[in-house]
Image (cartoon, rainbow, N blue to C red; front, side, top):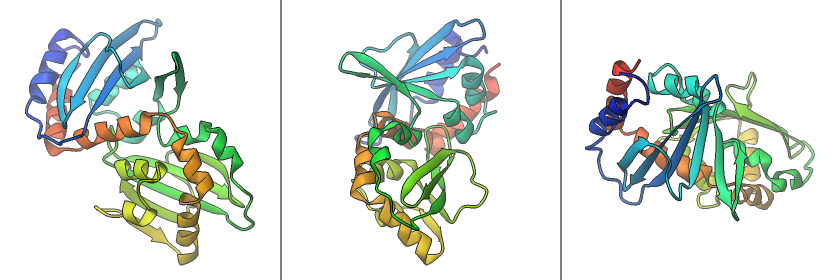
Length: 252
């Protein structure tokens, strides 16, 4: 069964037809995959209350987020050859703002593009390297690192940091909640979260994450965080994982 063929979409919808209801969980996503010749394959997905209401070729009116990959990356994602970190690292997102289209990196990398991040104050000795693992991400678990030197953000990326001071494992959705100021760092650790490191680095991380300046940067991010978190709440369900495994086994 060819990837993105009509039969593939029919099978995808059939396999995910009976996902459990999750009230309030929803997103409207447009996908765009570019082949080696520059051709575009476009499809969309609509999720409402945790269930996939539409998954079909073509464009979606009023999509809140467009996800863009090379076609081979998209195919490898749906044939279980790509993990969540690799999928996010290869992803570009686009969304409408005041009649224009803004493109950039997906959350959590999108904070790097905010002007607010450059306004963090200098804090002597506030130096930290944090390794995050966000489980229940949109395409699986996501590894992400972030470094600060004297209170200023100096680097971040998808993948693994060689020498982190702190390791944090939290749900992708809760990371978005911290960014938006809806959750404290401690609240984000509920529901299976872990924070490991020395007392000093852990306190420094909490202070940085909940500082007014960093919260302002988080609130300035675009819509990719909430949209991808909603997708992750669906894709992390065991029923969805079983369905996608069956779809991957039938995809060529």
